[in-house]
Length: 134
Image 1: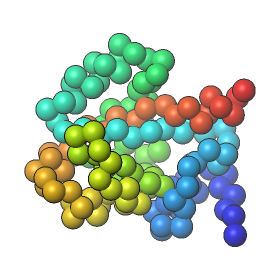
Image 2 (image 1 turned 45 degrees about the vertical axis):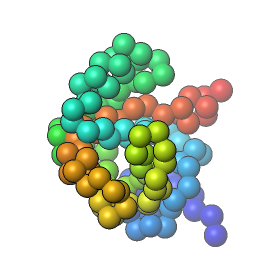
Image 3 (image 1 turned 135 degrees about the horizontal axis):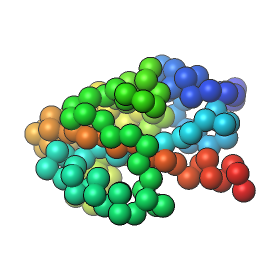
Image 4 (image 1 turned 180 degrees about the vertical axis):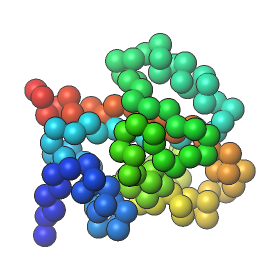
């Protein structure tokens, strides 16, 4: 059975239930899609500065408060720990996990301290929207 998800809220609800774990391209037409980047607090400012200096490949849609899983402006009903179809967890330059829910990440990472200091989520615009305009 293939799902047809017409709004961002529908996509997030299906992700939250664990029923949608695929790329979001083709879903929620007309809505902005975003990538989420979560970095340890010690690197957040440098990453933000990098994105500001490189707005075409890294357009910032929103910067979250330290430790917050909620946005203030975009998708205010979202819980960013559960409402994305898949997450990639890196240690150094290696993918160590791809959970559907980052509430579980603490169990899968060797260095729990990094996870507990995770902050700053930055929501970056996604190329899927640009692809649909071509």
